[in-house]
Length: 423
Ligand SMILES: Cc1cc2nc3c(=O)[nH]c(=O)nc-3n(C[C@H](O)[C@H](O)[C@H](O)COP(=O)(O)OP(=O)(O)OC[C@H]3O[C@@H](n4cnc5c(N)ncnc54)[C@H](O)[C@@H]3O)c2cc1C
Image 1 (cartoon, helix red, strand yellow):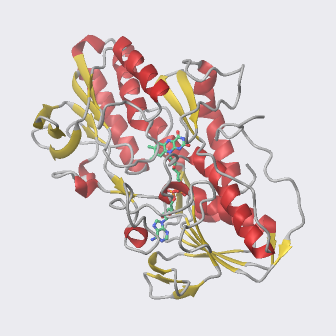
Image 2 (cartoon, rainbow, N blue to C red):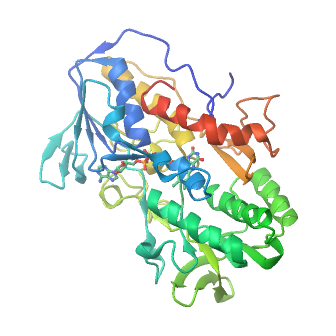
Image 3 (tube, rainbow, N blue to C red):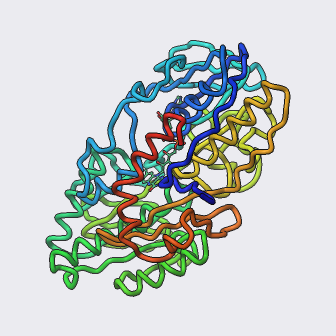
């Protein structure tokens, strides 16, 4: 299946091949989607290696389900499990955080003061939600007084659903936006505006509400053809768009959001808002020699990797996969599915003393929900080409029931297979 890379499309996994014997020490920072997928693939490819995962968080969060929790479609526990459920035998897990990476000495120091050495390092820390970058924001108040934020975690996604549901009963002004930084799942803020509009319509309250989307730049989405499709749908659904609006401040008591615009600050009253925080690399990477040294990703601290191999450009024994990778596209679980096998193959090739021809072409995807029961399957690569996994079956820019079913039924089992290194 060409490009069966949609996270939705269950791949066949690697063809069976003889495990490579080695005594290499491989350290993986982060046991989320990318870290677990990498560890479980390596365990199948190597024999005798010492593979250690480092992550303090014991819960595993199925983040693509957050939108469904925040829309009242799935319960909170739909997105919750534990990291240990996905560990193949032969993997070590240290429940501590990486506090410092020294890629010259090839060591990582944990927050408990433990110093770990490695032959190969995989950095899979994900990203940091920088809520502090919005003045007046208080994560503990998500769900109160009309303020929601689906990114912060399962409890906050659930609290956002309660706030959105109240808004759908009463109407008023609903405000949606995205940050000016790189972000994970850039479709999620768009989806949530659609879902709120749908909730209002289903309750017969659409005429009582005004919905507005504030885009951070001149486009609604990074891929022009998708941006145009969303613009047309927003127009049909009565969601006007303001461009070059970036949320800088929020007054949670008075319900006023302040946006930076080319014309200066603009105050936007709201009855409901979905706050999407700025995002950046966690400090352990941002403040390390692994971060981009120049260019647009320097300030946010993403890891400076080759976009085709995910190998660090200065430290060849370091690979960075998932949201932390400083590459032009990605930051979805679907990208993880395509990045990890490439990085793993290059790592194994280095152990074997051969070179690998595997390349990551920037594949990413997003089932963009447009209403309950309908979604667009948007898949693209570094060149903004659409890369449909099911040509002739699923038209990429059509609102389809089958794409909706993939999101609510098919995506999670495929994601879990990916964690186990089988997809
Ligand atoms: C609301 C929402 C909707 C989404 N929808 C979709 C979707 O529809 N489709 C899709 O494909 N993707 C979607 N995503 C994106 C997807 O979930 C992420 O891109 C994916 O989880 C990235 O995997 P990761 O391993 O890089 O990061 P994560 O899965 O976030 O894992 C990072 C791990 O690193 C650990 N860590 C962090 N710092 C350290 C440290 N210093 N030391 C040790 N460990 C550390 C964390 O504890 C965490 O366990 C969505 C995300 C959100 C939030």
